[in-house]
Amino acid sequence: MATVLIDANALSKAAALLLRLGATEVFVFGSATKGGLRPGSDIDLAVRGLPAAVYFSAISKAADLLGRPVDLVDLDDPTPIVRYLLASGELVRVA
Image (tube, rainbow, N blue to C red; front, side, top):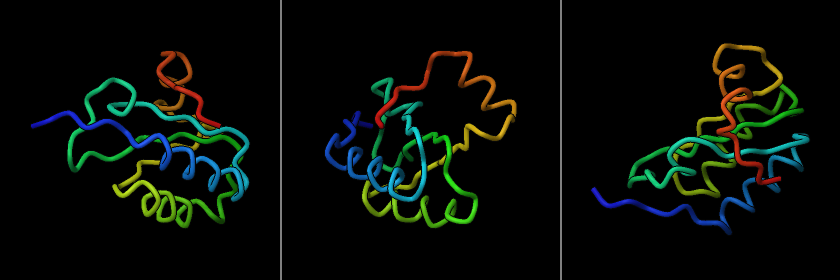
């Protein structure tokens, strides 16, 4: 399969949307930052400050803007994946 580059304009629009919905910070991580994004890959995003009431709507709207599925991680939720992401240096801030 061919490697696909992330659309920086679409990512910027998705980040702006997440900020409008209440996020205070937006990050991208995973294959989109490592050059391994493939056709059909999802985009891994992480946010701080996003109200729980808009979480699922945010995923849907961001996916529409990016043209692919979105995996959205809430960095305010102290789960093992959040602890890993914060410690690993893998997060790339986009807003």
